[in-house]
Length: 156
Image (tube, rainbow, N blue to C red):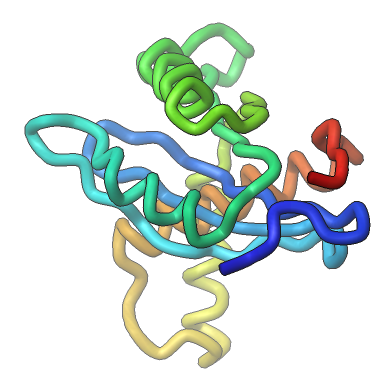
């Protein structure tokens, strides 16, 4: 189990929302780096809330970061409102500060990173959609961390 807050340090979980899959990444205030964690499949019933609950219980994040898709011109994309609804439900279910960030091009950026690592021999297996989703969550979290944003953190 990971501590929620220790000596002012905090953990974040980021989500790349999709109707079929949700990519998840983790990062923290100490390293200010993000790492792809997993991909959660969404079935006919929608979001696998128990799987997300297990991740929240394990990582005990201080903040949840959800990518909100936008069109190139900044207008709302088809998945913008479903992603916002997911973020609201996530906050409501877990009572954890939840921030929404623009995720424009995160999947493209993630796919390119994965392909480059495969070409360089760092990655052995082919790039799957699930890999791209988790890597996109990582990109979303990296952007949020790079913005210098931080949750309002207090020792428990």
